[in-house]
Amino acid sequence: MTPDETAPATDETPTEPMSLADIEAARRQQAQLTSPEEDGTRQIGQDYQPALTLRRSAQGFAAAALRDIGRVRESNQDCALAMIMTLPREGSDVPVGLFIVADGMGGHHGGEVASRLAVQTVLTSVLERLVLPLIEDGLNDALQPLMIEAVQEANAAIWRESQALGSDMGTTCTAALVIGHGLYVAHVGDSRCYVYEPGGLRQLTTDHSTVGRLIALGQLDPDEARDHPLRNQLYRTVGQQPQIAVDFVYHQLNNCSHIVLCSDGLWSLVDERAIEQALQHSPWPQDVCRELIALANLAGGDDNISAVVVSLPLDEGQR
Image 1 (tube, rainbow, N blue to C red):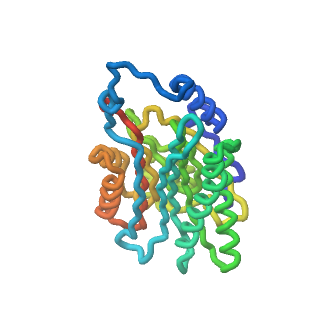
Image 2: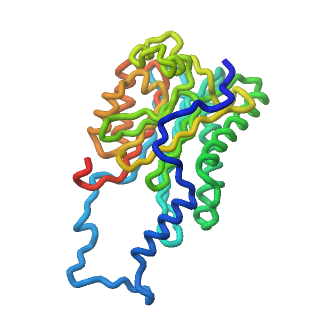
């Protein structure tokens, strides 16, 4: 099927995405409220206690990305990335996270090339348009077009490569950017992004598959999708058309404890309740990734498996 020309409307967005100008203004206001005295020395009282003794963390901002060939495939065509950094800014440093899962397709290692190109291109675009300008205090770009255009650049790079090689290579691509309490997701295909909230696991992305479309139209129950004969048929991918529409989702992370990105080699074999239980078993994303991959392999491992798990800061008593 020909990819959609426009991204489907979604009611998943509780608020408008914050621009970098909004984020910076909030950080500057906070810095002014806690700024030191004019001589550069913060005045503290005799009863002052370090914050460490008053506030302890149950978990912090951490991430892991793991992939596995599975039990059936002869090569691994998935690619996954997790990167966390703290960028120096005037007034207050900025924690930033970039997380990507790409599930490649195409013979003669074409899928492996496509998924790697997708991750490389999105990473390069975000570094050039977000990270370096942030360090230089010069960023003016809004984050929604930045993320969408990063995936569109990946589409163009893979399309050029496929035309040069005479290949039908393509890939899914789900890229998630975290800045402060904002999550910015650009998405094509059926690799998923979830958030784990007090009410349970919540899927933010919509699968660009025949089955996903039937579910969205109310013509198929999600429980029936796992065994549907068209479950792997995608109508939108990265790199198999010269232009591509990219879905975008913004989500506030105020009540979230985790973010999970994964390829269909995981979510098609491991149900949401099992993913929730794995998130509860360990505070370390690396351990959770290993458990999720083991569960997918125990369920058959009939595809490559990729998982990115991100833990978000929580104080004791919030878990």
